[in-house]
Length: 184
Image 1: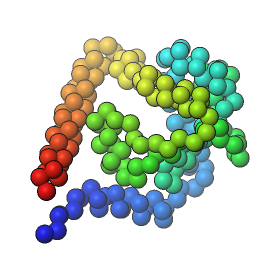
Image 2: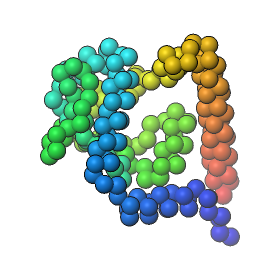
Image 3: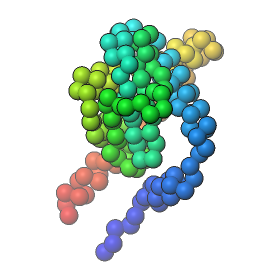
């Protein structure tokens, strides 16, 4: 008997086909990457230890790849990030091996890191890993600057409950899938 396919498989296939056919213009890609760098620097500025670690890596280029999406970042003398110049040689290449965006979200909700292939400078890879493990965006603090402490705290509590429920749901489904696979 054939196993029914998940509706998420259809969405993943649709994402693949659309991504292969519809490539945004280069200026849109550059603007999105520039906004991502601004956001990353905002988060890094909240963690002085992260900036000190990046100062030690200044000038090193890290290339991030996932499917058809790539981005090269360079560590600046200020301990922040910038887009690497066109044609820069990467000192470290990090390639996300999971193809499905839904699998990446699922693993993120479980608290797992996606599977990544690492090629290049080992010390730089260790610094990037430290950043991933220790630097977090304090959403509640940024929200408090806009709407005040009490509403920001209430929204933060609500968001934490939603994420907790999603993690439990994903964990329950993964556990059921593993147990049903073990029975076959």
